[in-house]
Image: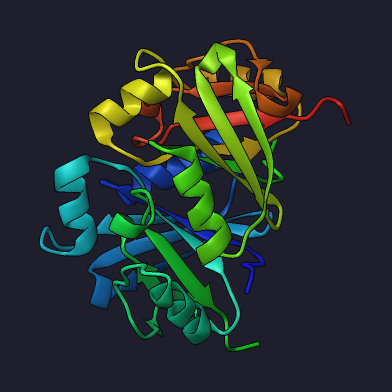
Length: 136
Length: 136
């Protein structure tokens, strides 16, 4: 039941190109993929750092989750995603312990992963995503 | 010049024991170390997830950096630390590109690492730490 690694860190940015430039030029990372996730109203850019992806999130709609987040809190780290197995069991386990869930059943996220969010009210203010790669 | 992995993710919490309980009971991680860093006015608790540590930070003084952060923004993800080599060269490189530095030269952080922070104004709102393990 223990997460194997941090799958990604989601970072809300106002301008994807400016942020990509920072991670490439200053930190020397390489953006390997840009994807629009229409359902989440974001454009995303991915970088690999060891086992973990940096996922930059630019809002495509002020009413989307990242648009609202930036309006309220500004740019910054939005969520952490833990790579797990048997995501349905993990969610049931968390719910049994009184953790409030945003997604009570997994849904499809970027890169085809099965994902679900726990509510920050139950997690010391941190938006935590669980995700599972069922593609093997 | 590319970071090898995410060394840790720092999370500001109001109560270390409550937060430890969440990461142990809900996520199944194991707290392997608790350390007070007097200089930073925090008590920290560490968990390993693959290559990356989760570092919970509880303030021991409202005037310390985490105390001020929580008063302003509440609990949540405070910073990301990238593991690098030749940290002095990395800082010089970032400064040359116009990045504002919080630490222009490395100082000692938790677990004896050499650390330095970049200023969030230059990094899309993300407090980024570079750290190097010179103990080998």
